[in-house]
Length: 470
Ligand SMILES: *[C@@H]1O[C@H](CO)[C@@H](O)[C@H](O)[C@H]1NC(C)=O
Ligand SMILES: *[C@@H]1O[C@H](CO)[C@@H](O)[C@H](O)[C@H]1NC(C)=O
Ligand SMILES: *[C@@H]1O[C@H](CO)[C@@H](O)[C@H](O)[C@H]1NC(C)=O
Image 1 (cartoon, rainbow, N blue to C red):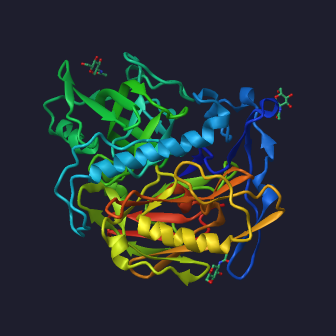
Image 2 (image 1 turned 180 degrees about the vertical axis):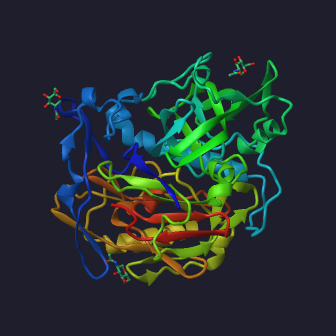
């Protein structure tokens, strides 16, 4: 049995292209079309990188289209893509800081240290699912995040601040099933590790949670329990969550966050009795497609190949995995395996661009540039230093990239996971290097696009299969 919820591409981060000219101001969606798979290269139509529809800001607001969040995007549509990259870096910095107190090696055992840092950054976390909360149930769109544990939603009364969201803000007084958690309850204390090291507070003997994100986003409110409805066959009572009465951040219309990390307060842990910490998802390649988030083990195909799940010291909430090699056009890059084992790698649905140890990234960049040598380079942008000006081409042929994981699992990255397109004259390799090899690597959501990704917490393994969605 399995519960499957459709997931929506919220930020359309790869596929939202912004035009700077005032007359055509707005964001446009495009879809990458694959023309043909040559021997090694992927061939894409450059015109498929171009605007296919102009978003209408009046209509775009809060509809499930790629402009969904741009209405309240503070820097305006045109800076959207640069902003996404900045947010992504803030999230990565915060993840790195959670590992900062640990030595530079991977320990393949349960970690005991609790990170004492500010928590992760939601950043540009891009994918949402709609779940039901309360009795009667209210539908809420939540960002799903494998790099966070605590689930929270904005709640009335907004005693501090609530940002604009798509659905009405949840009101616990209108629900028959909401209960506060008392400060004296031991579960209140578990918030410390589930929020990345924030001590719970107490107000009128009710447990108060606080979760901060490195980019100044935060949520503060009462820790409570509610009835959670994933599907009509999947109703969970007494689900622990944060009812946030003071929230700030760029959550872009989502009502809050669904925590899918490994801590006891995460959703997979709370529903483990039914689904044994097994869930899977597919992140769609464009805003026009729909992916899914599915709980239980009957939702995935038997072509899924599994690699062992690793627990990194300093990051017990994160899903660690071991990269063994990277190939470009079928040729294995010469990278010493210790480069990947020094700090290890996590997989994160909330980080966009994959971060590699700089030694590995520079080998990847060299090989990719060789494969792209017939195209003129374009301006680099922030963390992306390998960009091409494809404005005068009809089609482009890009090298293919695959990543291998422990256990001999080779995963070919889909074309939608190789390029990050700012504009036709700035089409960039969607990978970046960390500052040094001692920082943890992160397999980001751009590279996970269209793959079926299976988290099997019960058996300590992570699976991948191609073509999970389009
Ligand atoms: C934007 O909305 C207006 C009014 O509904 C409509 O006339 C126009 O065609 C729309 N533009 C686009 C590009 O969809
Ligand atoms: C939860 O606790 C807060 C603080 O004591 C209180 O204001 C609120 O009414 C309580 N909610 C419920 C449903 O008990
Ligand atoms: C990528 O390269 C590998 C190794 O040569 C090859 O087997 C595979 O077919 C290529 N994929 C595409 C889509 O070209």
